[in-house]
Image (tube, rainbow, N blue to C red; front, side, top):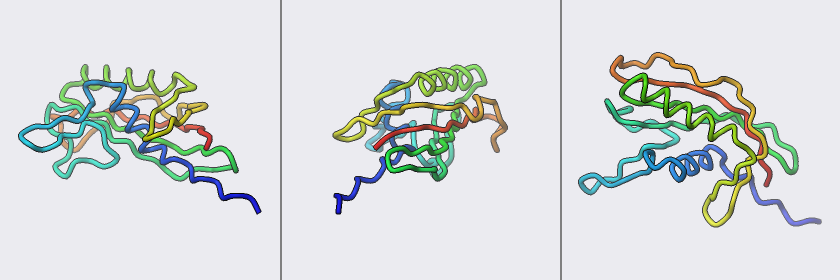
Length: 144
């Protein structure tokens, strides 16, 4: 009997960690003793703040083989103006499609082998007209 394989890394979390590491404007920081996050897998309880940048990384289950997983990754990019959100979403899109990409995840690196664009960045409505949002979706292939 062979040893069990380690589980696939949580690629939603891997993308969130990679974005925070590679985009200085998305790094978490302290304000008045509280940590403010600019990237997350959930929306802040109060929603994206007016004029603040925020990226929500979400995902759906993935087809897998013994070696490869291929989840769908959704990105919601928020900012205070259309110009700012389109610029940030465009730079994130370029980051996503430049592969293979190595992302430091804890004590290891995760290699994103391929990235297929399911939906390129599109400006979409948000429940507050003062917040701008861009949505995009990707299928990522990564190995154990």
